[in-house]
Length: 129
Image 1 (spheres, rainbow, N blue to C red):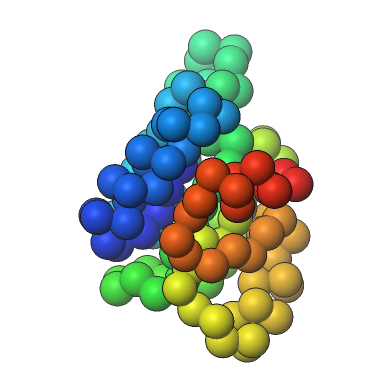
Image 2 (cartoon, rainbow, N blue to C red):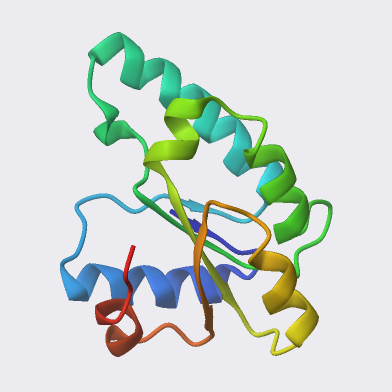
């Protein structure tokens, strides 16, 4: 899943992920609130179908977004069910090079990586999630 308020970034990142062949489905959201609601609904579908594959394994999350920034998303994410928190791994994908943001992201157990934009095939290959 891609969460970034910049639709162009989402489109480019989606194409890079598709060309890498690392997943079958890519969901994109331009805001954190919509992504949280999506995860809640996807969990209900996953439970009904008995198949967790409806949930995204990796969430690429931007920090700087209006209404709900990446850290506010992370705070809300921590309130989701244990199933979601265990299944979905978060990669901060941002243009922020602020060391405070890097340190702050490490406080969240679900944040597995912090990488700077732009997303590349090489950065996808180096992911350890």
